[in-house]
Length: 174
Image (cartoon, rainbow, N blue to C red; front, top):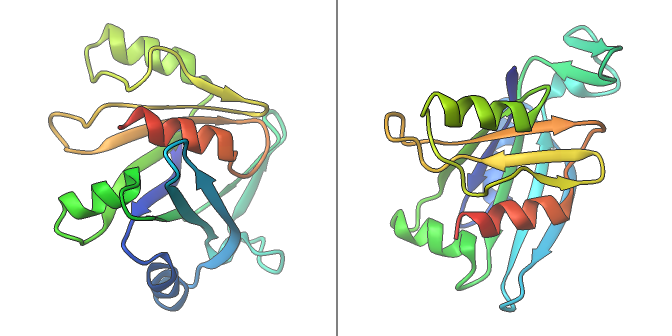
């Protein structure tokens, strides 16, 4: 298990991305929009750390068993929402100041982690089963009663985010 990404919900994804680019040497690897059925949306960036660039391979490790490339620093996921969206409501509950929404850990089996956490009464989940789309399996915990953090468990067969999964994860925290 390793830290895969940290997700921030913010009032300005452009300002947040600029901060991560300038202060931590991240770069934008993907930009996408998630539309919700109520007409709202979340505008998102996925940012990669500098050691994951094509020019620097010193800090990367390729696991031939899973086909996954590991890197030292986690990816950063930044989202801002239109007025009334899930993201906008979350940011507004925090007085308009964004913050870490969740920390995601890469695991071999999301389903097994869910069973283990339920068995050991570590924390509940926002869905009964993992959310699965093509090569991606994910789940969110409820806000943890000791740490105040939502944890995501993610099982990737390929790199990247899946818009359908992100939408379902966001909706699961409504």
